[in-house]
Amino acid sequence: MKKKPRSLIRKFVLYLFAVLFFITTIIFLVFGVKGYFMYQEAVKAYPISQMVSSIQNRENFVEYDELPTIYIDAVISAEDKRFETHCGVDLIAISRAVVNDIKAMSFVEGGSTITQQIAKNQYFTQEKKLERKFAEIFTAIELEQYCSKQEIFELYVNTIYFGNGYYGIYDAAKGYYGKLPSELSDYEAIMLAGLPNAPSAYSLNTNPDLAYSRMKIVLSRMVECGVITQEQANDILANGN
Image 1 (cartoon, one colour):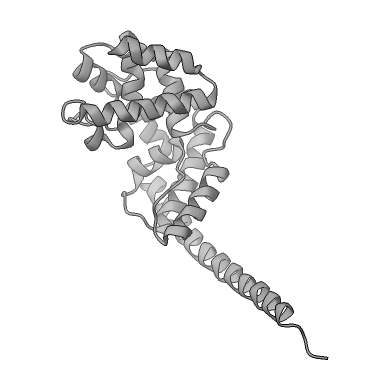
Image 2 (cartoon, one colour; image 1 turned 120 degrees about the horizontal axis):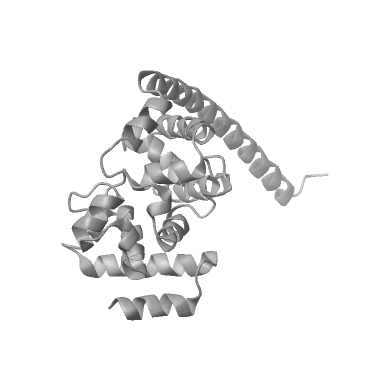
C-alpha cells in the first residue's frame, strides 16, 4: 500500500527541522567558543575590577541614591524590564531577538540587557557579529558576579551617551536642563531616560519632537510595567509642557 503524500511531507518537514536544528547548534557552539576566547582576552587586558574602579572614580560620578526614583524606573522599563531578576542575560529577550533576526534575515534586534550594554560599550565594538555577542554575554555574567545591581545601574547611567556631546547622566542633566540629576522633574527625568536609545536622533537640541515621541514610548512602557498609572503618565506629559 502506497504511503499517503501528507505522511511523506510531514516526515520531510520533520527531517528538515532536525537538520536545521543540528546546523544551528553547531554554529552556536563554534561562535560561542570564539566569543568565550574573545571575552577572556578582553577581561585579561582590562579586568572587570579595574573597569569598575575607573568609572566610579570619575569626576561627577553620580551614585544610585542621587538618582530620582522615577528616572531609575523609566530606564529599567525602557531598556531592561527584568533587570532586577536576571543574571546579566535575559533569555526571554534574546529568544525574541533571535526569532525577529531570523525573520528579517539580519541583526535587527539584540535583546541586550543593561549589563550587556555596559560590557559592549566598555570592552567591544558596536559591530554586529555573533562571536562578539557571545563575548558580551560572558562579560555581562562576570560583571553581575562582581557588582550589585545598584552598582551596575550606576555604571550604565554614568557612561551612556545622551546626545549633543553629553556622556553620563550628570552631564546630560546639567547640559540639557542646568540641574543636578537629583533636581530633575519627573518630566525631565523620563525625557533623559529615553535619549540613549538613539542619542543622535533624539538629541533635545536638534530633534525635540522626536525626543518627545520617544518619551511617550518610555511612559507607555512604564505603564505596562506597572511603575506608574496611565493617569500619572498623562499628568507628567501635561505638567511638563
